[in-house]
Length: 329
Image (tube, rainbow, N blue to C red; front, side, top):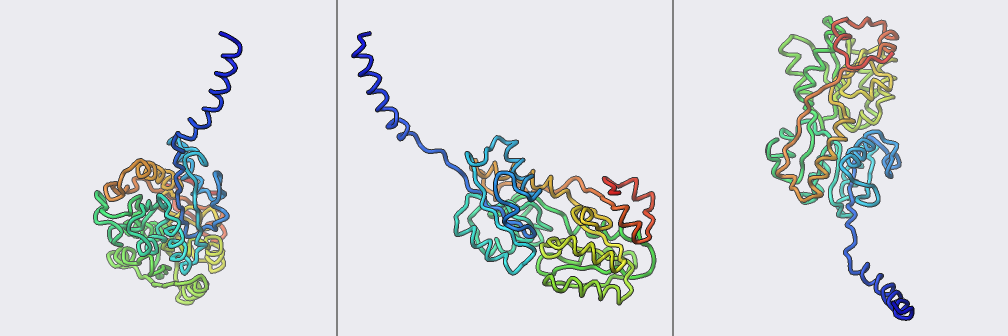
């Protein structure tokens, strides 16, 4: 080829390259909103957040081939266990018009009020059907789907395990937030077995310590903590109050036991967050939340803290030890 012809061809080709690149459609970077009821926003930011649950969600997305910053970005918001903040955080993500919102169960009432169009994937609704978030588990019918915690079913089981650990006639106190949880399952289980319950409602963090004082004043023999965004954000403080009050306490999630609590029985939240990524993937690919069945848990974990048991002067029955998925020493 003539040298001058080659140079002209090269220059013309080089000039044409940017136009070709500009003519190609830009990659769509999805925006995923994340709402946590108990974490701080700073713990949830970035590709490798401090929050282990949000990390599990992002790990699930990576396993499905998503690259942070290339395929998606996150818009995290943390409620820090302050229910009065939940509506504002939900409204903020709706105003941002994110593609999908991943939310913990306690955030769902605020989201239901804020939007009926943006897809919502819950990492764990206590009872999505009874709460009116879905029309049915098989066909949710609205903009909310995801995973269930089966709280109503497992509250009764938690009470049974607690009475196995602390038998006797003394009443069991139950602390619950009436805005997002219920004591009905535990009350029903107690009635069937002739056990006495002391129902203690809390609506803000300042009432937690008062509830413990009421429980000890009523000579409760043990305590059942019903999960919700309010107490879950104060797990360490609650474990300390339980130790100070010398109240053997049963929780729904292992992070209480890791914070010094005695025993927990419930869904593995880390696995729920990882599984939530499969819903996000389907929705980003065009699936409708209304058509994605709610996933119910098939595995529950029993976690026991032997150090806490020793401090309380409790001997854990062998029947519980052999069933434990993890024993913290």
